Length: 247
Image (cartoon, rainbow, N blue to C red; front, side, top):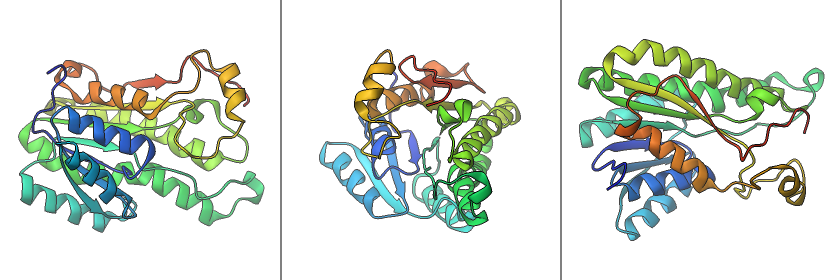
């Protein structure tokens, strides 16, 4: 099988819907044992659909912003499977949008927690076993907004830019242990979430049109595979050729 992940144990955070759901399902198709995570029961639906399609998946509901919950979940996975070979830090979102001078500290901190602290929590939890086994893949999902910014969304843009720096630094730390760390930065992906502009406008301005969650998932699958063993500390843009400066 091309880019097989046969029996690799994978944790995909925020995999109850959208991009995370697509990543979990594709990695399962490649032969991985997938742990679907979310803060809601939506991850159970993803895991059930994977199993119904012949794949191997379980669901673990926990809050990736809570270090204790993350450590307990990873410890359970290690007891059950003996390893977590691959981590996909997909959980993210915004706690609210506002101009900086009107934004509450609570919105800022909540947005940074879900998008950036979650990467720290989950990476820290899986790394000791990866280091011990001298193998691992960590892929974190960022956003084009990390580079372009967006008014009323400074917290989200800043947190996703933080994912870039975190991943590049971590890649240097763990390279001696055969662990790669990369970032995938999607552009406009139709996930069911509300878009900033009408979809018709994006169809006009994005050279390849609106992306699908599967487009991101295929890039993640490549970075998780042995074919990508010499790639680390990189940002992969999945944006259909769109580099906006304002909108």
